[in-house]
Image (tube, rainbow, N blue to C red):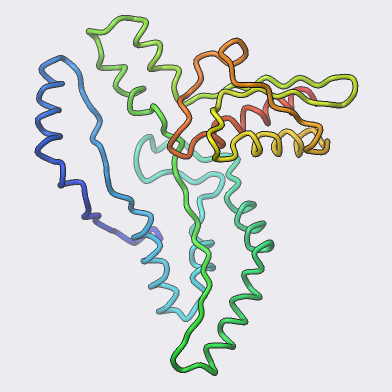
Length: 243
């Protein structure tokens, strides 16, 4: 939607006084903090796409799909020369739509609504895109931390990266180690699935080795929904290299 302009108003002002005091203190110390955003504009974009679909009499999912980020697109902020590449959003969307039976369920809901004046049913598909920005704020701050040691600057610069160690044995089994921490969110399962698909072997033949700095040093902290997005491509790159 290149002609849409939205202004976000939300929770950012709630802690403004505290944030201003912190910025003043850090500025006196010779540092510069990036502006913290507590708002989530995804809900507003979803509402806008729904309203456009309603006015056009179209399926909101089709409007959202038409505005996907694709290879060659550029962000409306930051470096204008940076283009997206290897965007898998369409692939993920199509697979989710097929497995969920979205079109069938939507048709069933519309048929039900025709004969039900009071009770209504609905189904929706809403894409969500988050940048893998764990530590990027610190990466930017590293340029301004002239009064910290070189060791600390190096620590800042290693964030937002991932490594993986993939070992294939003669019996066809695979031992995988990555820099993410499994804490019940299913990260290890996802990494096994990535290796299984890339190597073309059954998932039960892929085994996880405990996360260790002996195999993956200086790992990015696991959090902010970035574990799979950072470590997954590292696993995929390792498997592709082996193949």
